[in-house]
Amino acid sequence: MTRLFAGTAFDIPPTCDDCGKLQSECICSAEQKAAAKAARQRDADRLSPGEQKARVNVENRKGGRKVTVVTGLTAKANDLPELLTKLQAVCGTGGTVKAKDDLIELQGDHADVIRKKLREIGYRL
Image 1: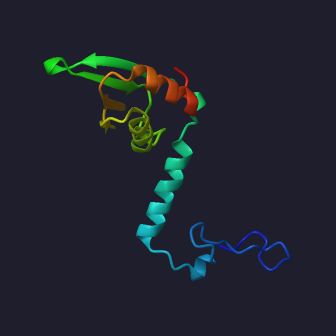
Image 2: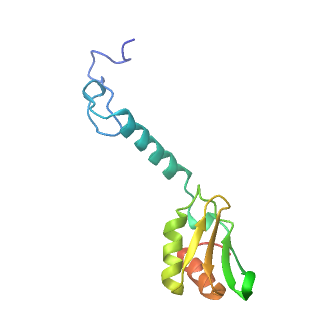
Image 3: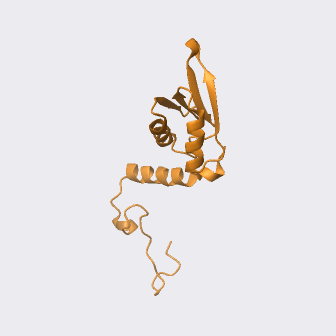
């Protein structure tokens, strides 16, 4: 099948979205195309912090230890490991991301500090 404007001044040959070359001259591998497509989809699924509502709770664990838990943020719409790094730096503590459960856990009772940092980033509480 030919292009709609083939042979006219409006003819624009199709180009590769990844390398920018003509599709007939594209050198991208199937893996590169799949990775680029996944990255574009991930970026399209992201939500701005103002569109999301985070919940911060402190839970008691075995042995009387306290854990601050941030819920309400989905792994699909956020970069949870990056957010965890920011929160750990503010609190000076360790933590983990449980992407399967869509939550962030930080060691200790840091609810006030985390609420302040999340508001500063732009999340609703």
